[in-house]
Amino acid sequence: MTNGLKYVLEQMLLLLVIAALACLFLAIGLMIGYSFMGDGHSPWHILSMDKWAELVNKFTGK
Image (cartoon, rainbow, N blue to C red; front, side, top):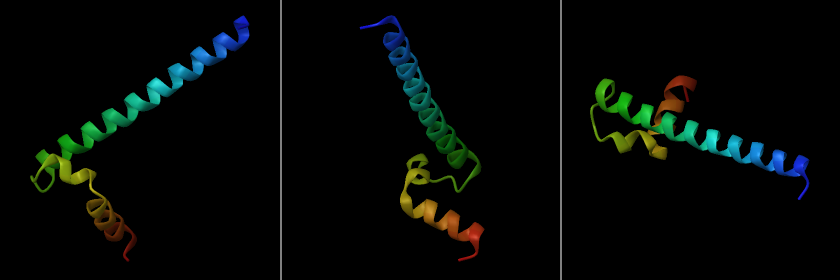
């Protein structure tokens, strides 16, 4: 494998790791915020599709 290709693959792997960590921290932040400042229900409830549909409908007026 050439040095250039190896460098590109390492950078892509680093980018994927950073994106995965960002998604993980976003989910953790949503769960903490919802459980303490939100309805106070289970922190897992904020990750459900029903809750997101409710939030989108609230802000779009549908």
